[in-house]
Image (cartoon, rainbow, N blue to C red):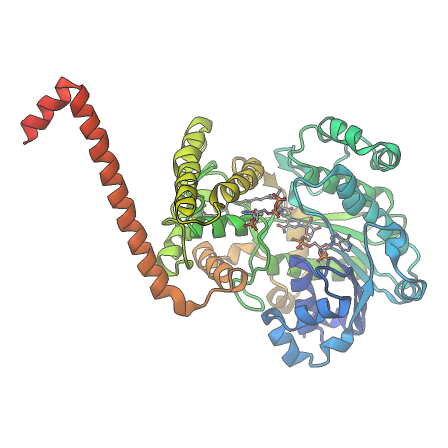
Length: 497
Ligand SMILES: CCCCCCCCCCCCCCCCCCCCCCCC(=O)SCCNC(=O)CCNC(=O)[C@H](O)C(C)(C)COP(=O)(O)OP(=O)(O)OC[C@H]1O[C@@H](n2cnc3c(N)ncnc32)[C@H](O)[C@@H]1OP(=O)(O)O
Ligand SMILES: NC(=O)C1=CN([C@@H]2O[C@H](COP(=O)(O)OP(=O)(O)OC[C@H]3O[C@@H](n4cnc5c(N)ncnc54)[C@H](OP(=O)(O)O)[C@@H]3O)[C@@H](O)[C@H]2O)C=CC1
């Protein structure tokens, strides 16, 4: 019997960000391994015209939860969705709900965040810093609370090259920033943002660092742990390989490459691609929840869950395997044949952007115009290139994250717990994982049917022929122009003939 699974039995667990990528996988694993848990409270806001209940039903009815329904048929009764908006004071939680949360919660997993790189400082601070402070305040009023697990990111200190499992101070106190955002207007905030974030690459990573500082400062006598995952990718093993549900991180790039929109990227091929499967992160989270509650470490422990130091993969290897998978299982209706040119040179990258991205988009838009349709490819390409430029910082550098606490925790687990809550990334076979990842993107994100593969392969062949034809025509035109202008070219031509 797993000690960790037994620990969560009968517990009331509060999860923020349960409707997000990580949150869903966390709930799934909790229900599957501890079906006798008492209740999971989730803080949810209505979204896209859906009520809280509709959002919960949609999650429970998804493929991700198929196994859960077998082991925990009354899962609907064990989720208690509580209306909450983390952007508002007291999260706009009703008095009755707040009372229940304060008196019943045993464990908190705080996953909610804005993960957009280009969010406004005001919104990102509200969600990633102020809301964390607010939640800690709530936690301090929970008599039954055993552990508070805060999810940060391995990139919260990406301005450093070597990162230890410690909380690093930020140059400006979070409280000062929270206070000043209350009276500064948006224009001034925009102006001072670059000065505040200094050598952090974006507002997201900066506010996650501030969030960690808040955790340290407001920890009072709570049992707290911080988890820092690197780039969270599709599931490796559980509940099935390849599950993924948003376009963040590598997912959008895989789609753009598979559909033939993106064929070159400014990346350092040998830089470490520190992707970590989402189920691995969730297993560590549950193990940390147990360890923090039971062993009550004296200080706030930070756990890195990264792949680079234990089982490194680089962007080149990843790109090659992604392309190899596209050969076997191509995406439907590609714009061009998938290709992946990595270059770390800015000039070459701009050349590829002009020749491989913008020019085909312009040509395609001309074609759309000529056939009486609305041009759209240039706009789409501009947005894609903007997105790619925001990711460039992370694919042109490598970091070293120490993992002493994570390894210590692994050694504390029983063999059964090491199996059920496996976060040992050394066992990961990258080639297999990447293939399942791409397949997962096709099935769960693009919702493409495997029956469409022969047609997609045919289309790829047609695109290859068009590509050859286009290049041959281009070559002949260039050659013809050269012959018309140069005596030397004419001599070579007569010689060949
Ligand atoms: C030739 C290429 C070779 C490829 C080889 C094969 C691939 C092998 C994999 C290699 C991948 C390399 C890239 C890896 C990138 C790794 C990045 C890691 C970053 C680590 C940071 C830390 C991790 C974390 O802690 S949190 C999670 C990270 N957060 C995010 O990823 C959020 C990023 N997204 C944003 O901030 C925004 O979406 C933004 C600013 C990028 C765009 O905002 P905007 O308002 O313009 O629009 P949206 O409505 O959001 O989207 C517009 C448009 O863009 C598409 N899109 C959005 N995100 C992505 C994406 N990540 N990749 C690609 N495309 C994206 C989206 O679909 C929209 O398209 P529409 O058609 O208009 O709907
Ligand atoms: N994905 C990754 O690569 C990595 C993620 N992380 C961290 O993991 C955590 C989870 O990330 P991930 O699951 O990927 O992110 P998602 O964007 O998928 O999920 C974010 C969650 O936060 C919730 N949320 C956002 N704003 C509010 C609000 N105002 N009120 C209530 N809930 C809100 C969202 O709810 P809603 O559905 O209503 O929008 C959603 O449930 C974050 O803390 C992130 O920093 C760390 C490293 C890497």
